[in-house]
Image 1: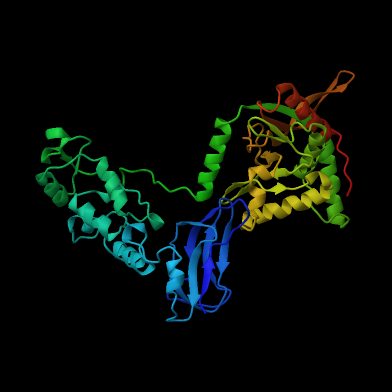
Image 2: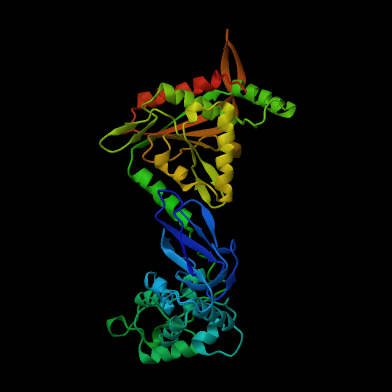
Length: 451
């Protein structure tokens, strides 16, 4: 009996996913456990396995499509099995060329566009093309030839950058109309009209044509579409700065205490009395939690006309991954020892980097406060951006030697760790933010931990 494969729901906050790659196409045989397709949410990537042996009888979406969760993706069954009722309840399996085409048609279009050089497509030139080859749909190619259009100037919006009809139409809207003679000469000579024509109503005449820009030397850049995660990061960061009153205070804390604790932790790890590698960042986060318990007004969400106060600390940690910045959250972090906190941080950071993190702990609403550490990169001061609706975020900087009064008129250079607190002035006053930042420094300078 045929089985419908749906788009899984990865977490309560995920409403749709982007198809990265279709591993098994229509007509291909599959075994239970084979990877059918890979997809990504706004923060993580996943792979979907086949629930049964059989053949892919239908595939309703293409690579690059955004698919609502719980939507039908594929049908797995026996060859010749009737699945008309399943298709009737699903998106159309066969699309026209401009919406992606069926899998077979899309592959044929791509092979055709790879095998035909650009100049041959536009002007019928029999000589090999100098330009790199482009992916272009038949309808887009036909319209480009008809309008004597240089498609090398088009950034395709189809799968893998494939140029489709709407891309050609968009470029035509920004190019002046051409007389029949101008079109004929443009096709034969490979020339293009200038920005505006000298004919009636700005129509480009033959005299307005000029040689196209040299494709090798005339374009010293390339444009790449940004990933889904980068779009969401950009949107989130812009919204944060646009919709809040952010201000940053900078302060240094004497790092001698945590550096000494770090040496002891390394020694204990080598001796086997400690099973988790406790880093300086783990110690700073442990100190932050202690400070948050003393300043509950910072451990909040600003909701516009109200402030949400949390009884527990749900600490977010910024993690740099190949796919972009992620901020997973450790729930109830104030219940953990420094070893438990270190263990949790390493676990969620690894999940972020390998793409297996739970999307629910990546939501800004999941955390009450965030720590972003750039100290390992040698950054001495920066301004972190708040994960709204959180009220504040702490940036941790590198350790640098600074002069300090040791008493009795004695000064010496001691290591200081930089702390940068960005807070939402709508939620927290400047005085309270300063006192909280000072409390973090105090906790770092007097940290007591057990393992």
